[in-house]
Length: 180
Image (cartoon, rainbow, N blue to C red; front, side, top):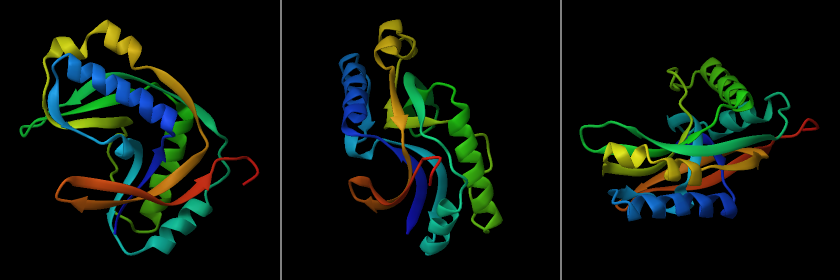
């Protein structure tokens, strides 16, 4: 199984992200846009493994984290030779970084090979894009892309690669609550 931990979004947040994508398309951005069903915020990419029970135990053993607010906003680009990756950013959130680091540490201690590089929280909107810089720096788009919401759980997600691209499905989750 190809797995990662993530923050999943409810319909309202996905609809808002879809509105940002529509604005980008109307501004002339072209690329391979993700389905709204696939919008998520990856915390830790785990990769191919059959150690599902070990990951669930790690998630269950995390200390209690309280629900917290996240704010999405601002589009950006990861430059790639094969076409850029267009993403929606996340405003600074100490809680998000704390949870991501703790999960990363526990996965490493359990001998999972996870990314130890700098965590850059984002939501991938499209791949293989060619985007004029003036579109990314458009102030009205920046303003329209912002939305805040409450994070109440952390998910374990399975990625199935198909001819049409990846399909993501939550297979496990833990609630964020001081009483967990």
